Image (cartoon, rainbow, N blue to C red; front, side):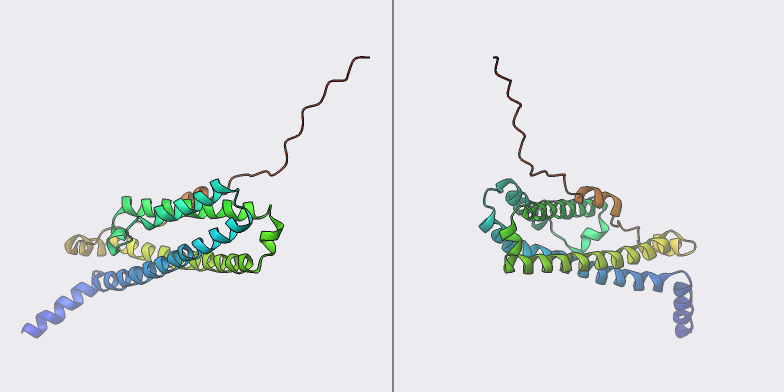
Length: 204
């Protein structure tokens, strides 16, 4: 009799989305770990990148300091597993990463004004590593977005929403790509020298 009840309970739970919750929750955890790995990879590249740029463009203190401070803000956020269940903490994490992306864009934009820096082998290697890491971040984020979307649909759909209420599953926050694009958009920087004011024509 006990075995029969266990079988019936298993059928009820599987029919109400319980197994789906287990699967999608694990997918989210795995995807989130990959996102963090790639963000950490980017953070690890920054000190060497900043030092290399400083060697050729030490006068760009504002840009160099901006990257360093943005990296420090990212590092101050504890990316614990609980973060993906806290919408406010998740938004703070995303904003910090977006600010770091923007700071890096400024740094690379400044490098365009220094031909010797652009031709430096170490800088080119770091730039290539950064570009590859940004691509991996995009892939990891997309996987995470899809995993969360699938999970959230299950939380909201009937009858799995009843299972969600029963076992305490709730909607998880997700990346807002539009907002991060706005944060990451580099500013317009002009290196043109200011034009001298026209001199008055001397009186004859």
